[in-house]
Image (cartoon, rainbow, N blue to C red; front, side, top):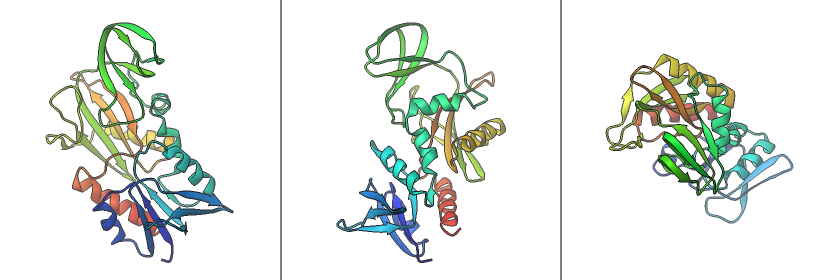
Length: 260
């Protein structure tokens, strides 16, 4: 293979692991590089800076404040990109992504709301406010009574139950039991672990992945004690390094894609 492949958003040692399995030239940028699309070709900064090199394939994995501009460029370029830039662009705004996902999921829940910045609400039952475009439990608050929105926020009922993440890696589905000492559960807690896959949640995740056109996606759900299920959010660039098995499956997926 004589292609030039660009890895964007990976940290060490994942860069080294992928480089060792990819034939041909590899550019690697842990953060967003400089780029341009010109005459149907994609050019990206060399790792050492200076001149830009023409790139044949891109593997993107990360969330950055201004990454939507890169997704637009990649979509206009139209070359091989993993994941699809249109899918990433449709998911990048977390609130808009949630609205799209709720229109497709079997488990939309109930009683969602939206509060523009500066608005004051008075909620009679406990709810969760979410704002911004970051994940990992950030930018969330449990609220009840009078609350002023410092940022435009979605509102949802506080769903009691078990927090799980269902991750699709190509054709394979894995499920994680999230954990934590308080109401904010995460895959990064030391008690989080892989668990048996719920077939209904697996089917729902496949459906949403197909809708967004993404080969890798992770959905966070709450499963109540009565078996009720609620979609909380869609992660279009999910963590793939927390569990060795997930990293192994992900690495195989992108290496096989490079060899297509």
